[in-house]
Length: 426
Ligand code: SF4
Image 1 (tube, helix red, strand yellow):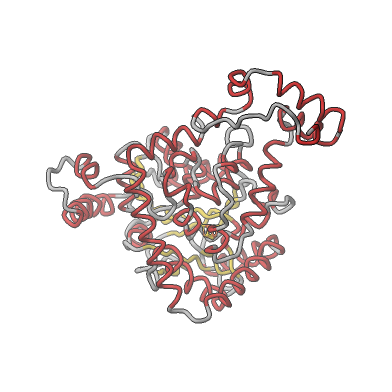
Image 2 (cartoon, rainbow, N blue to C red; image 1 turned 120 degrees about the vertical axis):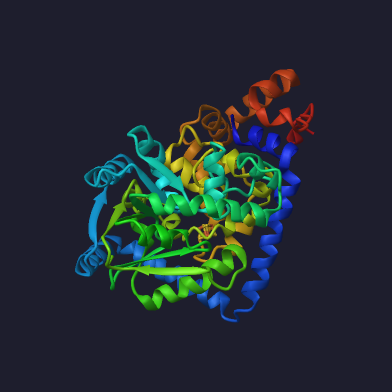
């Protein structure tokens, strides 16, 4: 199903509640950023730091690898999702792991790691509260920071087999269940929000401390992370830490901001993943690599708020997902850049200043480049003769046929009435 069909279904069931919940977060975020007088300067700095990194990515990757090795961290480089999953599986096989605890990582979602490991007999327990809820419901996250924002407290109570729907009670219940999983896991897997090149450290930000337990309790801690997460130094890290939580949820800072170097009680491994990122550097969409996954563009988007994240069908939904998904699979996700009103709200809130409006328009060109209908329209608009002929054909075709053949959108909207004569013909 396409985005608009899934969006309509979602809106009928949960749209207004979802919209209201996300709008409240957007307002909290607006209040939090007003407390920082130099917010716009920070955005400018963050954007420049990210430009510097993506323009010299190869060098920063080398510097990070050199310093992480000095720290005593084992490193692997995976060119794609398959290689990433195989590396992680081999590491787990070495210690005969049967169960892993995983904290939220969009990269492991991108690589389909859970399914890969589970097929090979390794149980994966997602430990972020929202992630665990969607895992137990057999769903995918619908938001990159609030993975279960589409679920109600009644639905959460139901999967836990509880009649009490009080959110605090349910959170404590989940905490109890997860504590046992942490204690019996053979390894922990997490993502990383940032990698500090000049130190070789990985930085993980969470609100629940689950990544920290997964990193510390088991003997093996694997960090799966995309190469674009590098920042040059601790000084640069400070810029992003001041922005990330404020821009995401309106908090001053994430509750736990942990910096991981050498692991004292076992082995820490970082798997750096390319999966098309280096190739993207040579495209007009390279600025998408600046994204720090704060999620503000999702939360503010009027389409996302009403359609829910699952309508995008891709691991990263919302405005940034509408740029990333077609780069991953142009045919499958060609509708996403059109699931947008170009209102520009995403660009206004993005802490690294990704030029969304321009990028989304470019993406529309990219996905329709080989589309017959768009080629036909382009040719008609370039030739007065073809244009005349085309408008004549349109006028002679019954509206019901036009509606069916040309405009799926008109299932839900009134198809415009075509005037009997062209303007130029009086
Ligand atoms: S594109 Fe910008 S606003 Fe959206 S998640 Fe990434 S950093 Fe945040």
